[in-house]
Length: 363
Ligand SMILES: *Cc1c(COP(=O)(O)O)cnc(C)c1O
Image (tube, rainbow, N blue to C red):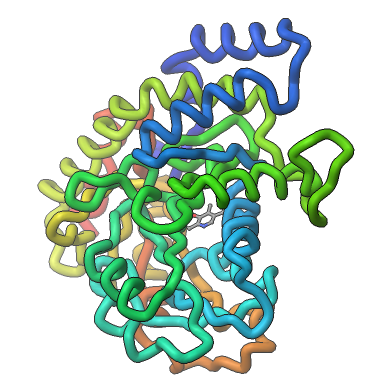
């Protein structure tokens, strides 16, 4: 048997008729940018997250860039972020001229809340919380630190659509929630797409203006903006997927639970779930000493795997100007060398899941 790391057409086929109808209706409508589909998706997604507002954007990186821009976080300001995140989280900070201050992750791969306070300086303006791999972060501790030090909170929810902390959705805690709908994300579009959620009307209006050349009224430009709109076709397709998001999350959870109950191999450390933090299993990440040997072993049995992520942002060439070096964030660096993600996706068959377990148990 052959088990690819991910296959995206299966989840298209699950609801093919609904997607096809949404696509054709939108094309027939003659309205392709900022119309009813985007407005309806924004309303539905805000409701899903439990925020008052949503603004549809072109992608997840733009959501992060516009979030910090709307909070007026720029040159010289510091933003605290975990050292093991996807590099786009950090780019959202630095494209605005702000400085990322890295903090080590905890054993759940999310930010180590206990290390945040030590990283706060007089220049700290915000904490960027990444609900990494799909698991919600402990938001009580984050929000109380934010109140104590008067910091903004931005949530990177690119991997956590539908994950909640104590029953409240990720993306509804901070000033702004940033979402990506990149095709492989839990709520994936059929191309690039993203959004922000917020319950602050001033922020929502500003981001809607910034995504459209800094203009709310046609040809009147309040400030220098971007072109970063979610388009009508993606919005129409996302509305279909959003209507099935609970089933889709349950399917991922079933696979994750099967892995957790059936992978029995001393060499492999399974993911752990923190109290009160729900996990929507964007990725199923295991950790082991001989990671590279294990990846080769999986490959020899035709099982796909991917490392999320092999180079922590502080060691990436793009951030050489920060002058950080190997050894500065040993936990994040150790993770980068010892983690690997197993196949988990909508449309994965029982036979495939069982095969992965069987091969892993023989390793
Ligand atoms: C995917 C991702 C992004 C970027 O989203 P795009 O839509 O690909 O720009 C940002 N942060 C995290 C954690 C992601 O996984």
